[in-house]
Image 1: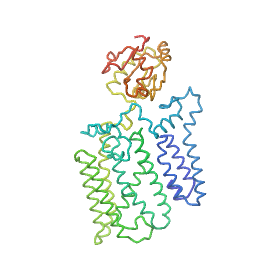
Image 2: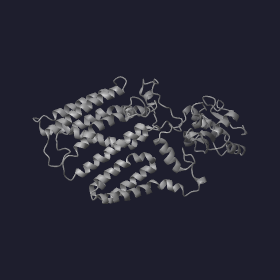
Image 3: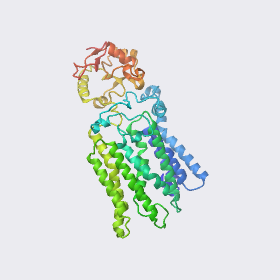
Image 4: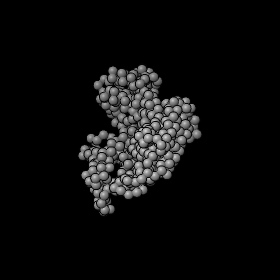
Length: 473
């Protein structure tokens, strides 16, 4: 898209549209977070008349739609009974899963993710360690959700960078609109496009109910761009840094940027201290780096220093130390999450090792010619066993407790020797029974009529593995 604006060639614009279409194929509606901002960037930045630019965007829109719907369209080439059942859909259709389950249901905030833990505002959560904090559910929708103190999407992850990006990036982009010159069109495009991308991300992820940390990947490039532009602008000692070529340095603007930089670093250090419990080494690193960045920015404005020395201090030295100040705490939080194996998706499909190892060993040794290794309560409950053993698994229900294998069909498969066991690792409770897979009819039938052999199979507790009624022991 940048090449399209720089050169005015429509081929680059169409290539950008195709890339966005591939992004939809990969991450569905998450890719749309970037789409309005990039479209505005292209409209404001492309040369030519308004009609010519609109025609170019219309052509790009056609390319985007064709590429974006290519995979969903390909599913229609096969009869319905030959297509994999799309998880989360109400009718097995990939289109339904893409636009309803992963679309309007998330945007409309109808319900939380099935089986997901819900953040309770007045509940006391354990926060003694980073691992405990990472396992707290994402806080409820609010205008300050991305700046929250706890949870897997707390300010340690994105909020700190977002705060600095807004405090420095907004004035930098506005300042860049001054003056004339050949770069003016690009600066207007960047300000409009990045501004809209940031706004879309903040509004969406502050108000979505069904939210995982990984979803903000469609937003973080805009945060990174605003952060880089803001730091580059604030660290510069010359008023000509983002104005038109040939402009004379403006000492007043230089000191305005210095004041904004120092104030922003102070706010970032104070905010990061509020995020943490105690003052770990990462906070001290951030504090020292912030003080160093502020000191270099001030020293670089001393006119008696040699120009070469001042150029090393700012912008290069200031930017480097400011980035350490902003990224030290998020880096520490991420390294801890990796070490603790914290998932950004709720550990979907991952069985605990003390269940998977004995379960796999017992089932593989007792198949007796069955087609299915086991019947599973839910499509997402047993994914790691499927990956390990590579055997077919019969799914009894899917998201929102939708029945996938009715009791009558399950009975026929048992009678034909196609399936002998069922693995059920959750229980039907009074809380949200209509969307709990454990409350689906075939699951309740297995618990009522099957024989619990969990302890015999070496599993850590009862109520997990059942010999299906009518199957040979």
